[in-house]
Length: 227
Ligand SMILES: [Cu+2]
Image (cartoon, rainbow, N blue to C red):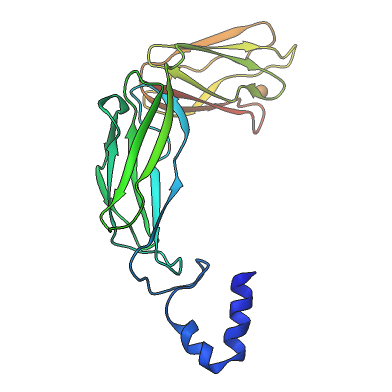
């Protein structure tokens, strides 16, 4: 589009070739020589739904660019929860990398349902950005249906000490719940069983457990255990 037309101009005019050799790339493709940062934008992690007192699954990230949209490294970004109710961040300061990106991880506070963090750059004139997360109490139990041939839901979240129960809804077709990964030691697996039966695991360690049915390829699920 704009970039492509610009490329054509570069090929046609020798005078313009010089201008194209240096400075910004205008579209984020290919190398460019950054000037002072004039733009700071959110580039990831805003508006996640997660649980009180837990770190958000994805980091917050911002990207610094110059007037030609060339990524600017070396911009120091200070991250701060808006109030004491808004949890904590780690790190509290980070520096934009070669792609112009700086990140932090937000661990939610224990009670506020909306929690905000500001990102402030050291370079004067850049906007202060605000990230928000939505927080709730984690589920203390979970239920998964064992169908032909899929688990529903295939992803579930439960608090430590909580129990997940699988109920076979598969008629005469046998399936099993066999753990494949997660914090050691892995929980006990179910037997291979059929419709009308159930199986439970109580989770005591924070982390993500993956499991599958050994009989049916692609019949996979996971349990995320939070504080
Ligand atoms: Cu199966």
